[in-house]
Image: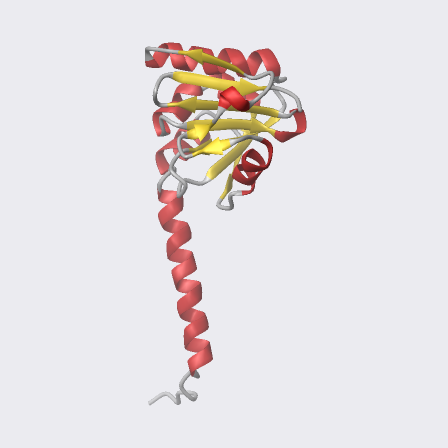
Length: 165
């Protein structure tokens, strides 16, 4: 018979419960991008996963956001371009990113589902593998705060973007 210590106190049990819930929530959110992460790894694309919403905060701090996304009509110097087909959307996003960012510039990809983690990677990954990101979610943003760059792809058929402050 093994000797057991005293039972954990209530505070210890509550702390363990809190830690378990946080771990399960992290795992649930990470599962949302499991296929995308596996595809990027198979392509040897370096990326970092962010469970926080810091990049989303940057968008809210710099752009007029309404329920459906950024109100591009209120963003001086912005451009919106329509698309019809998915392939056209992917080419449009890749073209805009490559026209305004260097391949090595760091970007964050934010998905429309708020539970989906954000990904930080180089712009070249978005340029080369746009379809992986747009397949993950119809609504997404690509931001590079250092260059004042924000691109929004909206499921109703347009891509809006702005470069510089």
